[in-house]
Length: 258
Image (cartoon, rainbow, N blue to C red; front, side, top):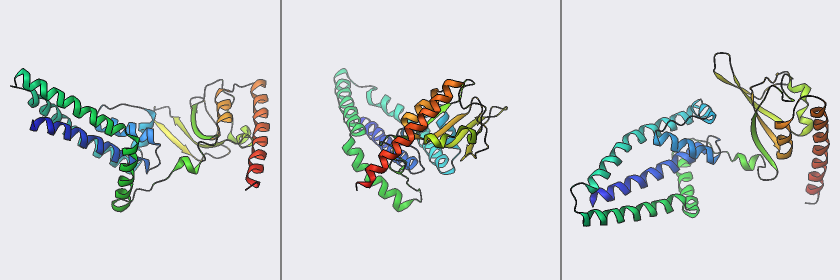
């Protein structure tokens, strides 16, 4: 029985560690879903590779968090397996059945604990207090800061050779006229290394294969990501410019009412 309780305790602690790591990664500017995925990936040791992992490990604070998760995860996995084996070895069918029921009930409770929004909210407040008290990790609510949820968003898309933006400078694209800001560019070099160009200038040329990180209205970004070069692309650009001006007038009129 002690082994079974130990197993459930280990799983509980693992959930709490992942929640703390997720909150810490969020404080470095990562969205919650990305922070949660990277925390689980590092703690479980599966080594799941995404483009997101590149800018996670390139950030010094995020790298320390991920390194600690990998260390904790590698130490805990063998302990879980050993405890699970000890739970059922040399036990009668009756005892094994009882322990299996306890294990399933415990796992169900842990699942409810891990997925409960109310518990997540309460635990999040406690974790935030702890991070404020004992760390210098800065929290930035980018969703509120950038008006995400009010029609605006931060998104990325890969530039194809036929894209309307390919081979042009940011100045010539006049994306600001559509209400779109290019925040950064991920570019793969000839050596296969991915470099990040932050806050690119007006003379920066957009190349095929670049991944653009943009901020703007969802409609405008969706249009830009699918826009092809040629007359049709130019006409679509002008249409989105008119849409942007109309949207700004409506937003300013709404703001004048308050």
